[in-house]
Length: 221
Image (tube, rainbow, N blue to C red; front, side, top):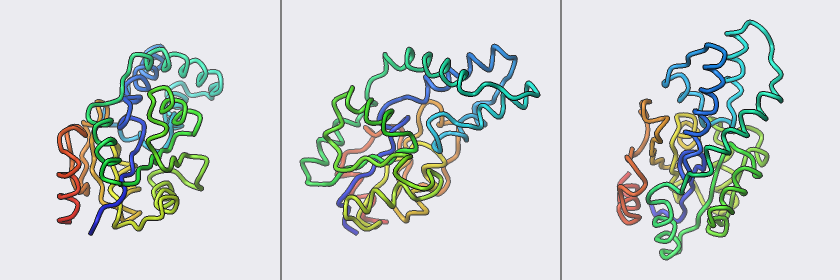
């Protein structure tokens, strides 16, 4: 197997958006006297930028429907305040530069929408690094369905055995494996409490291995 493309998740993998997301929701949960375990919260991640299950948990706790649009606007405002200090995660820029130098194709496959992903990639001067950016509105189903990764392969002109995926969530891992792609899981601050059985490799950080090492491990699969 010869790897010719790298496909990255975005939230929690390129940028730690997951910690601000959790903090913004925790503030709301605390306001209403609701406690959600770290394992339960982490298991929700990867399928949507703002998990609908979070609203459902709060509504079940209160026993009534909420104005989700108003709550969403309030929460996102707080999330963006917290996100302002976040930087691209360790090893991401270096891996991208190494991949470009080696002639590999690069893509992002995210369950978030383009406004969020493209905006933050632009803000952190990474938007031009990718040959394809596939987001929620580009497919019928987001993770754990394989659609995002299959569409990324299509846009890159690659087969599944020619790509390597970097993920940080259980939903993302399930999607990558359904697409038949070698998957490296890099748990983030929020998801590292979970088990990632089925991952081809689990790394503590993208920076833990060089590009050559990632390609070598994938080539032995």
